[in-house]
Length: 317
Length: 302
Image 1 (cartoon, rainbow over the protein chains, first blue to last red):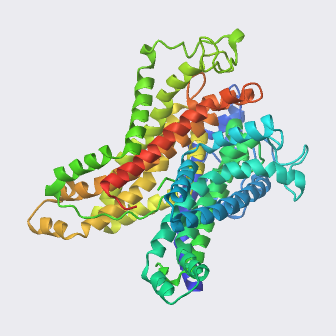
Image 2 (image 1 turned 120 degrees about the vertical axis):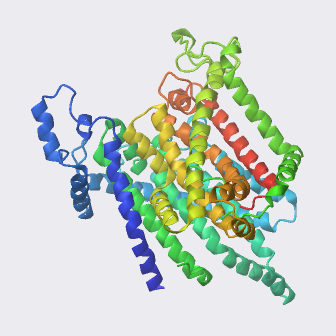
Image 3 (image 1 turned 90 degrees about the horizontal axis):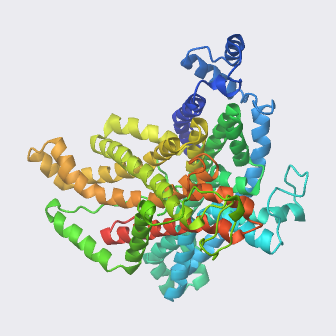
């Protein structure tokens, strides 16, 4: 098992190398040279050259890349052009806020998806199956940022029962466990959970249905096992596939919450990324993308390993 | 499976059934017959055709000018005389803007998938058919793109390149190449293992002929079905980029951008503020249902 995990980790190295190249390239995709983003167009040439030298932009690209990689590997992601704070600190505080929202949305989506998907697979009546299929179709088709606005309109503007934006009461910058902060979480969590809900419900429904048609289920029934015990066996067999899909979805939530965070002004990585783009704060853009991609890779690796632990049949090489 | 909408969930293995190429015409006829008997798919296709035709013919439909602002007629509610869907935050006619908006919104959703289908599909078929080191090189590069959540990749690329329609198309195309390439590679590898490919090789067919006749004939269906399932994701993603201010620039009518600019109106005229999203929702649900119908009609197991 440990060996398997280690092998998967080593396999990640070339991918991580590619990711670092792509993230490095982001700065150079920007129109003009990277310096032009931070100096006024009429800055004297000496100043521009000084700045280029300071940031190392006067060196050839491969040298710049190696220097950047070296510094980044020590955990130093540079300095934000907008705030002057270290990128690592900015991303770190935003990351926590994103994770909290992602965990809440994952839990909500996954538990609902398992209930709905299993119900649809077991249902004798077509209506239940149709209903669940429709819910999952809506989940994957709805523009979630629009749903977020609709939720704000209904629950904050019309009914006035939930706060429309922010992470907590005024002046609150971080998340804590209390009523006010939980109330602020409700709408973003729902809006964020619709896509994974749709995708995972589909997967649970089809996987459970497939498992139910397997011979071992008939054998268990013939043996006289109680239905609730059989359900346990079925779910255990369906779990690896559903877990893998959910893992991918959870990763997408963390990287993809930018639209929801923007609608709710939730101070997470997506919000940070969005404001960095408009301030042309390239170090923040680069740092956030790198941290999120790194997290996504590790999450996928973890899901992979958990999947192998739950289901030893798939020890993929 | 619907792509990871903003979560492309790619990865479902697609199984190919070998179809004798000589039976080609009969196969497509039966697909057409099955589609004609599927009311849901037909209705969705009709709605989509209506949307496409309406947005293309918008200048000839005698609509109000979608760019003409009026400070006096701002945020009229639904059902106002002359503006039956109301007016936006600058007094422009909503109905005209929603119809005109379809031009960019549909274009920006469909184009990246078509481009990605051409590029990613060719790369995937090449990787799958040639195999060996070529396969390794192509697929390892795709793995790098898979290390990013798709929405993050689209936003970071667009953010770095700057706002604009071309940049959005480019970054969305890049986002959709890897999933299409992976699916194409997987189905091509399966088809390459079928006996009729060996038979064709033994009878002296050139590699080009084998790809053109035997491989394409068998992989095109599954790849197309997969690509159509990505269109709804692409439409939502493109609208999302414009919503963030990274796509289409004002004053162009585009559904995502309209949602963004109307956000300030949610306290004044909430129903109006939600309208552009309804258009995105309808379009995306129709594309998803059509893709499901196509999959069933073509008998592709996903």
